Amino acid sequence: MISRRNLLGTLIGTALGTSIAPNLSLAQSSEIDPQAVLSKNTKRGPLPWRNWSGSQECFPQSRIAPKSIGELQQMIIQAKGNIRPVGAGHSFSPLVPTQDTIISLSRMSGVISHDEKLNQALIMAGTRLGDIGKPLADRGQAMINMPDIDEQTLAGALGTATHGTGASLGCLSDFVEGLELVTAQGERLACNRHTNADVFEAARVNLGALGIVTQIQLQNMPKYRLKRETTCLPIDEILENADQIASANRNFEFYYIPFSGYGLMDVHNITEDAPSVSDKIDQNDGTQTLKQLRDWLSWSPRMREYILSNEMQKIEKETTIANSWQNYAQERNVRFNEMEYHLPREFAVQAFREIRDLVEKNFNQVFFPFEFRFVKSDDIWLSPFSGRETCSIAVHRFYNEDYQAMFNAVEPIFKKYHGRPHWGKLNSMKAHEFAAHYPNWQNFKDVRQTLDPDGKFLNPYLKNLFDIA
Image 1 (tube, rainbow, N blue to C red):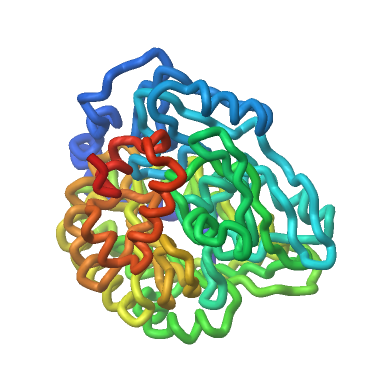
Image 2: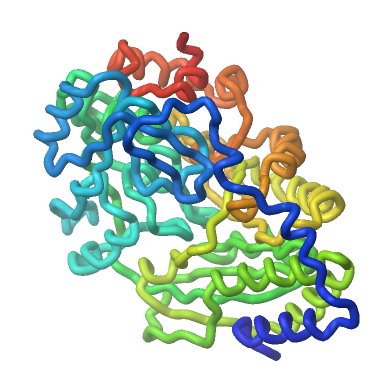
């Protein structure tokens, strides 16, 4: 048995030891300038903005970052043209780009107050998820669940229904008990299930289209530790037992390594055991190694698959026990573009098998893992998990490689199985398709129209999404 850290050297050594010299033409031909996927018609202003992967770009006339709600109100009233809120830029869909004004709440962050009896906390909307864990722990609380990246702002994560994994756990928006937003008129509007209830239902997943969310009342739980166990298994074994594993563990997800036949399975469960960690690899190193193996063995995808499958089956189990907020997320420094759809749980495994077959048959340049997660149903108007138990499947391409061909090929499989796209991930769905997926689509549009009749918070993408001329 070897650790994932040792696997890196083994894979590289094996690849270099093959009898035919590596040919890098595949990697060279597949890599493109990130700017090639950006809009060529963007009017350039003085202050560029790009998202994390570089796939979205705009040149707004103004980029502002208020320090207080009062400043935010004045900025909204005085701003000319359209306004778009921006968080950490971890979305891949064109929710942010505008030629007018971008507002960041990066200077409005932190835990404002907490309720010890209810295990709730009032948190500023610009707070990064990774900056919430320690302040909550100091107050005896912890977030109920978290995603596997914690760079997002709280408002951005809620606005796009960002989620972690766990068959009994909802997306982050499902933990919201109340929130406040500043409207297009500069007014502060508080809402919860009893006050401005329609606004609350719309605002829990809002796409930044209703106003600027300033603070969130978040339902938490007493602080806890998690035991995280990572196991490498044949992908067919994981798929055959996925439902059972999901039901038996608090959190369960797996990553499939293309052209390997193996997946890395993560489960988390609450524990009272003392913090500890086994030898583990930085995921960024692992991803770069997969890329190198792809590049070096471009002349023989079969050799690549043979090496991966033989070496991955030797990976030993990893165990990490840590505070919940330290165990959920992992640092992701290798950039990518992503498509993720949320499917009814009963169709997800079959959809995954079809996606795997399609990609491995037609796209041997792919090396980024596929991700598979479970999410509990909710009743939020624009939540992709509304009304059904869900599995999420995500596919990725390296940030400076053309993702369009693969995403275009995979997306029909997602749609065939009634998938709803993640609001922050790339997709081609149109207004009429979203309307068919969301029973409260018109209700959301009505609330949006009431709060922002002049469309101050809309950009071209959102206007098309809501059929606004």
